[in-house]
Length: 185
Image (tube, rainbow, N blue to C red; front, side):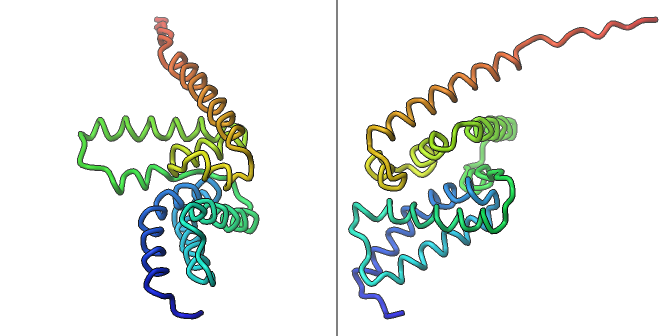
């Protein structure tokens, strides 16, 4: 590997700061393991540093997320296991000291939302993850997903609608009163 010039090194460091956490969260959707997701992201940045020419700034995020997805899918195929996300671990690392009950409720809500996201069709799940967890814009998402910007909007719209409906159904089930237990003596 050749040594990078200062401009390339600056771009690489800026990319690492901006995209490392979103990429880890994205990779978690495929690996289900935080350490493996970190390894995938590390490999992604290693590949970026080995490029003869770094992608243009507007193409950087799509390049990173595409390489990350491919590496994560390689991991998934290699390990062939169910995907269980650990995004809450990342959220805990960055959380300020909230009240214990509030933190627990927040973790429960995040866990419930992750389960609902996992129930979405694959393309909707990927779009929702790229938008709301990775923070990509529609143009970047369309490049990562290799689809039109209009289709990205469609997938997000329907994904969010489905999540909203599933959330309402989940809340309705939780609000049903418990059946009293009759004591027979």
